[in-house]
Image (cartoon, rainbow, N blue to C red; front, side):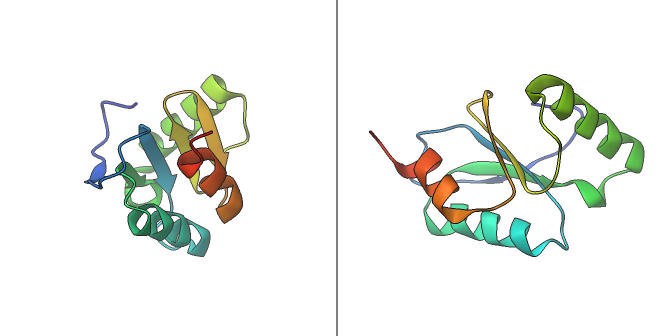
Length: 101
């Protein structure tokens, strides 16, 4: 989504969605969200926004807020460029990413 940051890409067999996650390296919920994606074999890319320069972090947060009209907290996942998952509630992530109905 942002071509001025370097995402970490994790390949998995489940490529049903384009998943980007904005996370904090010290956040327990973020770690659980990334582990869920990995454990479910969901391809995704992520960035730890606390490990990049503050001005870029602020630019990302502002752009996410402007585009999705949501308060930005972490983890903040963008699914297929249009749906967001904010925070980690496993049932919500499972329903959004794994339900095929």
